[in-house]
Length: 312
Image (cartoon, rainbow, N blue to C red; front, side, top):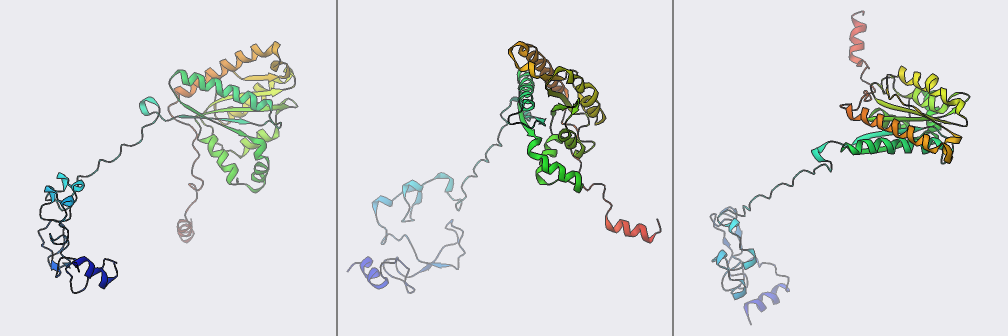
């Protein structure tokens, strides 16, 4: 019976090393030499795996692992020589590069529309204005990310914030998007010669400093051109109060402007206003009006107590 068969009969072909040693595993366990390059301590007893008696197979012979007895040629690597498995460190992957040339971050343009239809003319006008601004910035080599906020979907959240005094999570995300944008397009339908209540309520909930210095394009839609003056006597004063940087050209689209007769004039106004907004955004070094921390003005409790003790 061969050494392998004897070991298999005794240990059930599981390949566990006998506690007292066996011929299959090269005989009596011996301590590993501390200088063998594997980093084991000299007192650690392991089976003398790799004796020429147990693994004397020509297929495993390799000059790079002389006297080891079990090394495959596929594992021969000069980087392991006398290094104790100290393989050369892999190079760290390079950080991802921004898709834009020069690594400039993409600009963020947010359009706020208060149309109630689906789709609404206010949304259509906002999309076309955003496309014009994006084309202008694209010609200058800038990438633009456009986000459209339809206030119709936030109506209940806006009403709740007006009553409760603070916005919910959904409305807070919309407000953050506006405050963190590099440019804003605001489009309202005109009712009774002024902006809609939903439109006004959204900007009433917005932080009073949220639009400071922000490039802003105002636009409106209405059933008749008689409402066009609402841009200058309602929307422009409101955004001027919020200290937004309003582009000179405001766009009003009446019902007849969507017909073929007035479409060319509307396209011209959209192109001019979008170009003005794109140029203003490109000239602005960073997004203005970032939302301040909600609790930055809150006095810590211990300071309040100290003030009470001191009689202040």
